[in-house]
Image 1 (cartoon, helix red, strand yellow):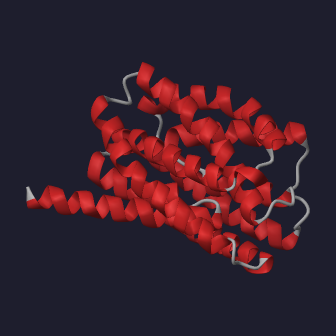
Image 2: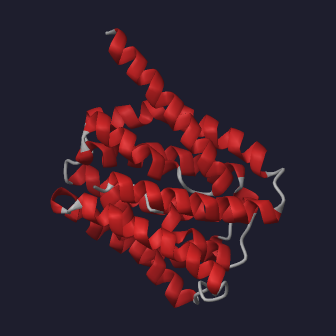
Image 3: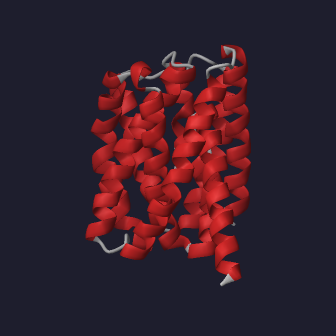
Length: 243
């Protein structure tokens, strides 16, 4: 009994801390929570629990930055993300998760190098951004969260601080909500995993609120460096946990 209590406390603390990180950097919470949830719940249940927790975290970030969200960009992203998230969620039961996780990790590290060597090449037009949404929706359904993967593309559209965090979070909400519908229909999301995710939601919302207070005080130059540092850390973490 005592072990379960301490485990619950540890999960709440992890959810709060990673949501705070996501609110500051715009991503990273899901990447850091994924190995923790896999260790506790197993790979399949971990993705379902993470999706519920991330919906709460991203939803809170949208609310706290609601006046700066680029709604047009969210709509373009959703055109690709929604059908791809459905396809990815349906493939969850048979997908090689470790291999895909390593691929995402390599991609993140490559994107940081790309931004530094050719900082303008990451900017894509509306059709390209819909394609980014499709890749994100598909990958998110399989590994729970690929927020770091899309970060360079949102940054390349000139979004910083609240505008970047709110817009990226709104795009993530679209994906997570779509996944929950499919997970529920395919019995990947059960009452147990759903309730666990909901229990972690207040901690995730609290972390998002605390992170908003921090990000409002960050200079733009420091913010971009922080995001890129997060990309490197997330990429390395995914490579390690993907084995």
